Image: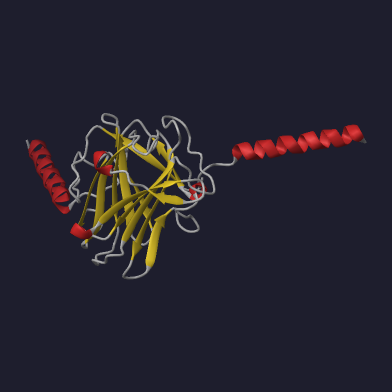
Length: 266
């Protein structure tokens, strides 16, 4: 009986260890591919369909919101656009982005957890225009702590109320370049892969749009989405072409067709 009990105990222990090893430190149902660009985008709070963002990938979330992102190798940048359908100028409107990094960055996978750790960072942009504030937070193992780090050296950010190829009506867009390997917080912001959470709170409606959706929380790294990288550009253009670009293509197609018909008539 003792031998049987020992065998059963060992099998149960192996099962528990195997299960623990397969538990992901992020939400496996929400994975986003980060494509590489050769161009550092100009940060001005808007975008057009050109070399700046053509390599990017797109992720829709909430009710009509979306983010587009890409990475640049030299300098090592995370380039991000977040656009939401909100167009009201409320002081309490808030964009939140959370990053689950690690001590070493690089190829180290995100470590997740039930609470933010010292390797997790949160960015909050509150309000609009000249009164907008930018605040960073760092985890302490139980929650978020306000950071006094000046991010001007590693974050280039602009926001504006504009019309874009993705959303025709005027809406708020946040455009930014972030230096991935910056260690102002004591560790790299992120490595090659990381977990991420994005949300936008609209004070006018009292609603929050987020990726991943609820019950994901900015306070629980295990619930964030997974960002994996690709060494190439997005094989599918996910930023829709602007009207001018489509007209130009159409005109080119008509001209080409006319030339082909003339050749055939000969």
